[in-house]
Image 1 (cartoon, protein in one colour):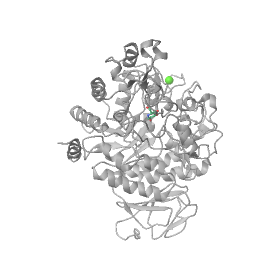
Image 2 (cartoon, rainbow, N blue to C red):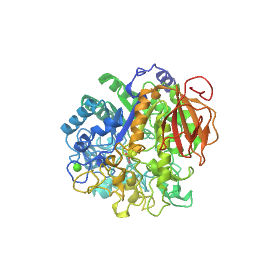
Image 3 (cartoon, rainbow, N blue to C red):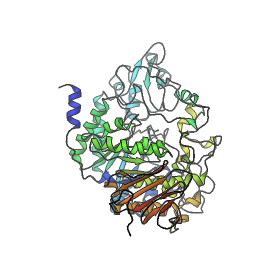
Image 4 (cartoon, rainbow, N blue to C red):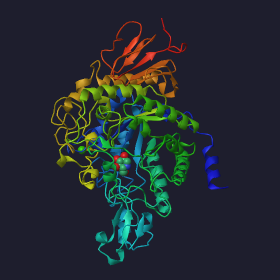
Length: 586
Ligand code: NOJ
Ligand code: CA
């Protein structure tokens, strides 16, 4: 049997997970460093999360995804792991984590953890041993070391700027290392693993078993499209200067940098799928319905769907949905293609608007749809209109939560938090900022410590006022304390929408498009109508029915009989099945 046939027959295997909990789950991303800081050292920690489990329970989410909490030199905010089986001391201990898992489970919330298999930290014991060992040794074979006597082994650039190859000799001071390099798709302190090496496979199988035994319910797989590189490591089209190449495609400034999928010989190679089949087998041995979700910035929905075939992962993040921005036609295209592509392999679609790598959607959506803000907005860039951004963000989220499948939320979006777009240069920590020679601001603006209270030195993030990134002016006005019980607040909107979504089983529903004006999306999901107006004028939905929830406040109909959707507004409607426009319930 050829490998293609093999692939096909495996992908047609029936799914064992048709009732899995994650199919319609709302999953909330916690970025531990910025969530809450119990001991006041300016760095969020596990105990801080434990103090706010009630917030998560009141929000009604089904699961949390914890960004990396492992021991790490924190060159890339924990995505540089030096020990895969422990916690960073600044975050707490394994016992603290056990207690958090127990608290969350007690509250009916599942726990997904981050898995970083493309690279380790350069401080991982394996990489330290590799540097100590000789060229060609088994220690070095766990990473991607190459010899070349006339410059770097190929032209690849790091995604964080600069070349993707680090010369070894300056690190070891040994002449035998002259003209040896190792590969790092991200920072130089994040050497890429060699996935042709059996030790690496064994390490991550052990990792999966270890954490499932500790009680976790799923894994978010970092750079899932990057683990296997094309045979022979051929040159790519962007070269080592990728950020300048990207910037030169526009006039300059944040708005002209385009978020590109990762393409070329370093990404999306067919061999990655064998790894996910291997992991699926491990997870099926040790648990039931364990979630595996792919972080794969691949070009198309069809590419992403390959990661969620029956014998691979459960879900893949829907980045085309995030990137679609405020463009009704593109949103509709992404929804249709996603439902078709994921549906064809029996996987649920997912939806996401924000995470720790992109500009928060309450700011991003204030920009015109054709402007891209990746990665980050600085004080010299055009500043977003906060009111417009928030109106659109609330509408986009309400619309997203009306779709079938699983939805991902990023901490703070339930507060309507904007991006910190005026952060001073000196405060920036993201390696992108330095590695691109300050060409791009980086991702710090979406990682600012959360506000929990109106007042206080750090608005309730801790009691000392120390914060690893600065909070902007007015941060406390976004806090849960300021929003609690307030009709029309973003927090109230999120809580109600999540509760209604569950009550109406929208995550397990389907999409039927109804006739709507250009710039307007109107769909039926079971007996719920879901509408979004991306235009700048009010739109009337004729014969529309009872308003269930609106992104605008106060939630008036704008008239009698019909529903008038204000500009940048979204709503859900009671729509008994029947007439093509939903009919009239009375
Ligand atoms: C994707 C993560 O989300 C991002 O934060 C990180 O910098 C890279 N992968 C490298 O691990
Ligand atoms: Ca702390």
